[in-house]
Length: 394
Picture 1: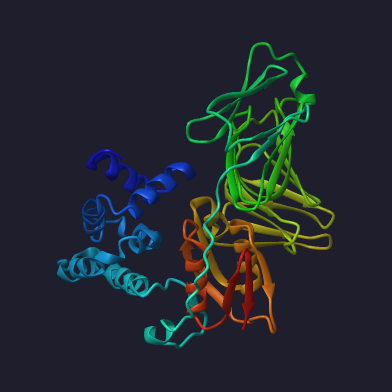
Picture 2 (picture 1 turned 90 degrees about the vertical axis):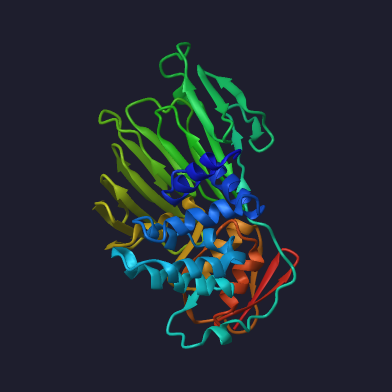
């Protein structure tokens, strides 16, 4: 980011969730560096009285990184004339007040004052967040660590060229040399370890974002009557429309059939149910318990015996893709499973397991100590870091 125009463009793209993970990380690192802080502060001040003010509320990490300028921002709020968006200012001020004392999480039914919430225990040890990375296993068994691979062409087989972009993403391209049916027999697997996330563009131009500790298996050419992939873990799909060739996702006894749509699938082995959340279009979810047709805003939960369908806030299910942790009345075990995967740590419960429910949000760019301090400030749980182990107690 060499000038204010580039900074401004990145700022608005970040607010609108238009940056990919690599671009978002560069943007946040630039903010953390302290360079151009006045430019960032001016952009925030300018948008306190604009329709984008609501989006600022969804980006607490922007304000968190500018906490040294807290007084200036609150002064700007107080100085604003009484205009149509004044109803947003108390909410912004409240978020800023929480950020000023390092708190964005809250405990449901909590009556503690901000002074009491500040009494969280200090966590000296620290663990950095996850990063972009994955391992590609080709049909011949060759494994390629994508974090180490140079940009450009990294593999070629059966008329399929695999490239790594400058943004650190994987792109498949079909060539004229592809023989009919040849690439279908060539199976690739893209795997992320704990603490890794990656994005791939498949040969049909469908895009898949993979969360930590996940794997996606697919035919290199993704040709044939069906476009079939197998998922373990969690991924967000933007499926390219092709009515003649249904796109099928298999995961833990579930089958999803789509023609072209956007949806998220959580199929981790340590979660009780396979959860599918639809953002646009429609999908058919099937399993031993039957099948359901999902419409936008619907979420299905499936196990061997049941399949349920509910209306949900899709932002919660896709927060990880937008580099955030978002929780709503969730228990500590669910939250710690997410932390365990993203920070590549082992979680150990000592004594009685906390029973409080938690809600709120925090950036996935934060070190684990920051996330734990915020959780601990609610009084609902306590943590101790020992190496790469996190001890949880009530």
